[in-house]
Length: 244
Image 1 (cartoon, one colour):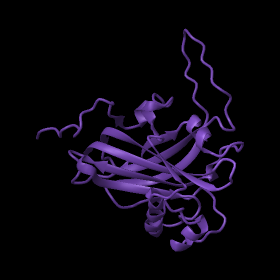
Image 2 (tube, helix red, strand yellow; image 1 turned 180 degrees about the vertical axis):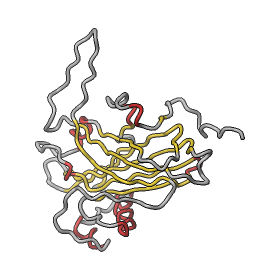
Image 3 (spheres, one colour; image 1 turned 45 degrees about the vertical axis):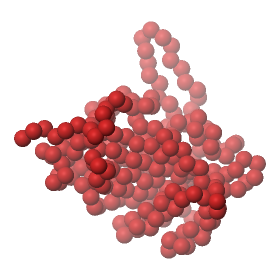
Image 4 (cartoon, one colour; image 1 turned 120 degrees about the horizontal axis):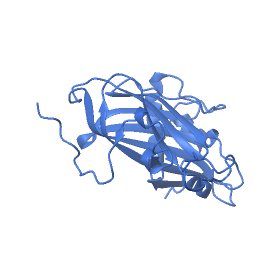
């Protein structure tokens, strides 16, 4: 197993300046049937759901007791791949790269969270749609260096990919901390994220560590504004188009 090259060397190899970075630049991908128009990573306290017959409490927010949310905005465009202006059985796959360190050693450690949401159907209406993938506070606390508060700047990169049945590519988008400034940098962003799929000794992959909305306390929030998610017992192969 070999160590991943240092961050400065990696940026240099990709032709990207290694100056001061701010976690505000989102890769906006214009190609594909589903256009990823914006990606953002933010922290939120656990939402409190009020019940009429029991008391509801939560731990105090802030510090290290917050969820990391990958907020996704996307635009499904009319296409030959859409059946009657609807995309059926769409899988959205996400990846988030966290910059941590080995406890007690101070060495860099990269934690790669991945997860997915499977949508029953998405209307190809050319309008902005919203989705989210989340990292629970307990996973963040487990894998981020101790005694430091969470901040957006601790993340290096994120990616979103949309696939139709048979893994037909429908769209992609990338966010890289600070240096993705223009549309032409998509290849650099993709290459940067793909570096973390290799078997380096200082990369830890947590498949399933990026939770779909319906598996979090946000399951019922703003329900009408999110596309319909398949339930867990949906059969492989997905639903069939409506007969003409």
